[in-house]
Amino acid sequence: MNKERFVVVGGDAAGMTAASQARRQARELEIVVFEQGAYTSYSS
Ligand SMILES: Cc1cc2nc3c(=O)[nH]c(=O)nc-3n(C[C@H](O)[C@H](O)[C@H](O)COP(=O)(O)OP(=O)(O)OC[C@H]3O[C@@H](n4cnc5c(N)ncnc54)[C@H](O)[C@@H]3O)c2cc1C
Figure (cartoon, rainbow, N blue to C red):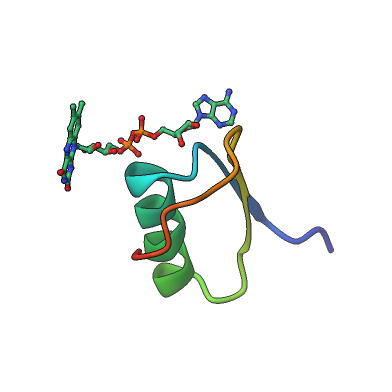
């Protein structure tokens, strides 16, 4: 069966907050974040 995937574009505050929230709500979800820059926000 295909694993559900959650894709986020942008890895700063909003994007990483969305990714963190998705992980809390769905432990099995595959989460991919695309960030065009060299760094992502690490606090969230
Ligand atoms: C002048 C200024 C000063 C500020 N000072 C502070 C401060 O001192 N403290 C504070 O807490 N907040 C501050 N803020 C607010 C803070 O910067 C924003 O609230 C926060 O960065 C918003 O995050 P965001 O994820 O919504 O958007 P953004 O920070 O704009 O993040 C969007 C991300 O998406 C990426 N991206 C865009 N297009 C693509 C693409 N096609 N593919 C892949 N990646 C992509 C970008 O590289 C970026 O990393 C300031 C804002 C401004 C304008």
